[in-house]
Amino acid sequence: HIFTMVSASAMLLSPLLTLMQASMATAFSAPTTAKADIAVVGCGVLGTSLCKQLLSHPDFATRSITAITKSTARHDDIRKQVLQSDVDSDRFVVKTLDDVLETSSLAFQDVVFCAPPSGFDNYPSAVKEAAEKLWAADKSGSFVFTSSGGVYEGLDGETVDESSPTLDPETNPRSGRMIYAEQEAIALGGCALRLAGLYTLERGAHSYWLKKCQETGVQGREDGIVNLLHYDDAASACLAALKVGPTVNSKRTFLISDGNPTTRKGICESALKCASYSQYAMPRFLGPEDGLKGKIYDGSKSDDALQWKPKYDSFDSFMTSC
Image 1 (tube, rainbow, N blue to C red):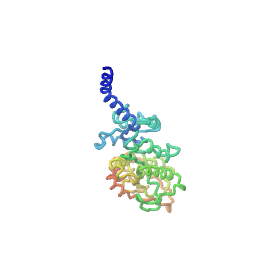
Image 2: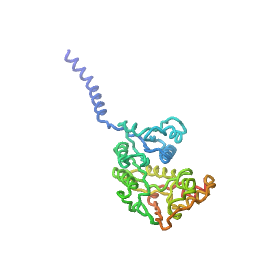
Image 3: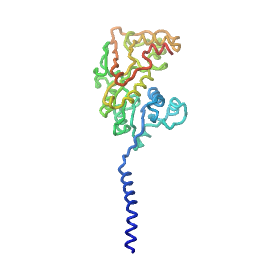
């Protein structure tokens, strides 16, 4: 009878033990990273605009965003700009890069790296580290790196597009940081958005030239070509890259501008139409007149691929509407 009772007990316990073993096996075989949503590395003017647009865009209504900075210095300001609040929300949090990297169980489906090179000793390595440590290993989302159109070789009136040659990174170290950073992002399956000169009403070449160069003058010829892009449009291009996803953007380079190149003098003429700058005079342009003219951006292929167009189609239209 004793052996019968033990046998019966074993039969009753057997399914429970099997269930426990299966549960333990599942626990130990589960991946060590949990995929989060979207990380925005660098939350200055561009990153903050992107966070606001992601939170308000219907296609991202179910997504959460983590803004990642080097320090906590601007966290309260970022929250106020993005959320009009002093505290994080259930869809938006601000963290330092160190805090995020210490959370080894966290990876993000999509990562946008829009921090400038000025904050890093080794910019290409920082981009590589972000792609390797923040981006989910399955690469089902996108890694978007914001670069600069300044990497292009053309300098004297040439038109450049996505496939145009870039400067030699060895002899042009400033552009070289961007070029090498692009290479790191693209090698890991990400993409690079080469942005035109960025501006807002208060920020950009126009503000510096009109406010700071009245006496000293502006270096360069007055008809030197300048390609521009509003910060909000740069952010919407990043959002567009996330929308089309890796099937379109992976390992590709895009050129983003408003499609309406202007000149140094044209920038000042447009800004003087705005009430915020109407009290200033046209500065002198110091040339030399036989200096290099600059390059014209043609990003039409990128616009089509990303299904994107700028809200502000020219610097002049922005300034005349401010």
